Image 1 (cartoon, rainbow, N blue to C red):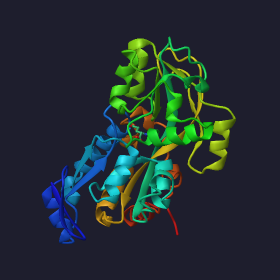
Image 2 (cartoon, rainbow, N blue to C red; image 1 turned 30 degrees about the horizontal axis):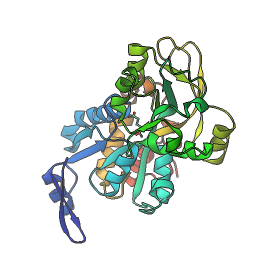
Image 3 (cartoon, rainbow, N blue to C red; image 1 turned 45 degrees about the vertical axis):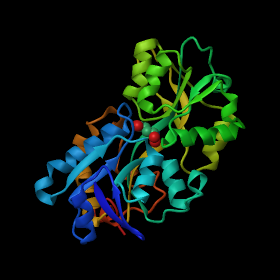
Image 4 (tube, protein in one colour; image 1 turned 120 degrees about the horizontal axis):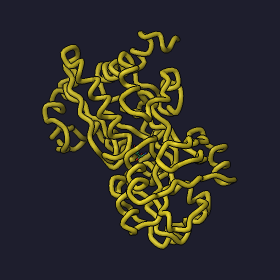
Length: 328
Ligand code: GLU
């Protein structure tokens, strides 16, 4: 439990240490830091776990303990950071952009000008997985089918809604629009409860591997003029490709579009906490890169320049300057 002061009194929030709120209130350095991730079969969860592993290795130097929690995904993490319930979170680049600018599904709550970027991570292609007996060959064929559109706090749910708006579809165009969290969707596909999984995720991931291995599920491409328009009109969507051989039986490249995973925090997180987390990742970069196959493509120069709509946190900037990664 962590106490946080709001305008009207003390609010108790579960999931973190009570001591943390008190230490923060006293203005001292943070002792516990939390990273919001995603479902346990995705890539966000191992990403948070791996970052914490590196931070905790240096605990004697900085005195901080890092903990990564499984959550509903990007939008949940951005909201938790805005509410002061979490210190860091992994979030898709499109939702980082909308949260900072107060647009799209963040229009109602308004711009979060306290949101800060730390670095970007792996690419997340928009991945469409179908049952082999579903008769779906092109993305347009998902109309009339049973589709998992994702839980409301997930990043893919928002991306699905944005794509559907571009196609002029509504949820009523599907025979079923289920809201299963990512860890449950593979099983549901193989149990014949849904025909289609839509997931924005790094590769390889257990969430995609599982239905392919268990019931011969297939990945289909997402391309054409609608996707071209989306990519051309926005700074946070880009063309993406799943190289042949990423998963068993996938013999050809699969074209789609994607976003980038990013690590975000808030001005309310201390410079020292952000500095030490950033330092732990980049001082041990080859170890970090080897911690998950989706990290194989990571390059430090890209990680501090791409997919970051919110300003970079002062604590991270301090490390980037010190390490000569940024000069100003
Ligand atoms: N991109 C997904 C989201 O924002 C999560 C992917 C993952 O768990 O790796 O909710």
